[in-house]
Image 1 (cartoon, helix red, strand yellow):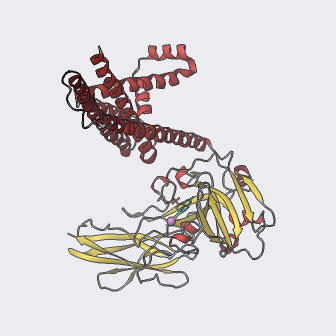
Image 2 (image 1 turned 90 degrees about the vertical axis):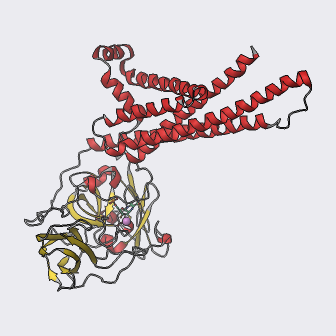
Image 3 (image 1 turned 90 degrees about the horizontal axis):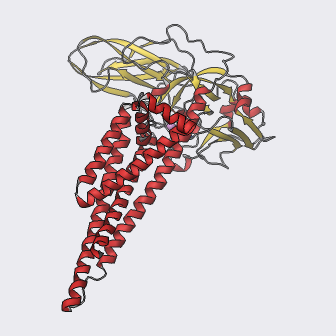
Length: 534
Ligand SMILES: Nc1nc2c(c(=O)[nH]1)N[C@H]1C(S)=C(S)[C@@H](COP(=O)(O)O)O[C@H]1N2
Ligand SMILES: [Mo]
């Protein structure tokens, strides 16, 4: 009898180890689903899969029985099934290793299958269930190993006690061993269990907030622009491999310090304008729209863009001029900077002069390429200022504009090695032929983009090997705030060639030749690429 309850005790703890392994699996998957792929929650994917495969009469029965609670009941049932299945996996891992881990891997495989067969998933969606399986299995393995060590020392102790009674063998030397092994099991179980609960619940909650704001965003109808930007004929060249004139939102580079994308309901969003102002002003999303929105074509550039890099993109923004917004509050004399703040605490320092300049289209944007700002790009309201790097001007998820001075206030990146003020260093980039990809000899196009926001590009020049600099053909610019495309025909001869590109802006300045790193205020240098012709 005593022997039976002795064994049963460890079976129960093995079941607990299994449940913890399952919880770690789900929590890890939820965390990575949040980071990599919003639709890749295993529990929801399996739930969706069950809904899809259950025959219609059952679905109707479920709805008739549970009404609008049918999905909650399904998820609760699924949760219970997961608890039972992982408890069984834990017991299996103790009594028939490695059957428990195998069971968990099979479950991971099934949930991966459920995820990839859902509509509209990205290839990255396989990562969350796979990483979940790896981490969950590892924890289960570890927990059961510790449980087995505890059981072994408990068995030894019991045998010794039995022997003690009969033959008075000297007291055990490793008496505290059982307590130690027991503690090692429970510490790991507690840490893993608590982490899984915290990480899992937090990730799921954030995912749900993202989903609900995404729904609000999809339903949002922005007003039509009062004025639109005319894209002139010849603004977009037709060259394969050349960047599109307007960067699609899905391809637009993203740079920010946000670990998870902030979720703001436009209904509750407020912009506060305070600091050195005549009056503190608070604006709602509707107040911004009521000012009347216009179209602005502006190319955004990141200070971290290396020569030839990808951290630059062009968009058609919908918004209102910042000068009109700031006028509502009235900047006091002496102020020379606006510290813009994001909901997550990020700040940028922009010269006040750039924001009130009548000649410069510094805007609060609500729309990007024909839709409300994507969540990743600052929904519901962000700043866009032509001619300044993003980190000193393009605050996303904007909540506050503090009128202040450079002497008084510092932005997020200023104490981290970047300049407080940072105009964009104008530059040019080669898009095609792409580096490292051999091209066939003959007449081929060389093409790329060049930008000098707020000034405009006058000329782009190309040089092959050590030849003369030759002018490239430019696309018709939309305005001086957007990039232009450039291209040139090249009679490529077999071998390797250097293709270099540089631009001249409308002030007549030549693009800086001297190489500079991205810190403290942006890279410079002429892009020179080695092209292989076969
Ligand atoms: N809230 C917030 N806004 C931010 C940042 C950030 O980290 N947080 N990064 C800035 C930087 S460095 C750049 S280059 C641009 C990039 O905008 P994008 O991600 O829409 O391309 O956003 C700017 N706005
Ligand atoms: Mo940036």
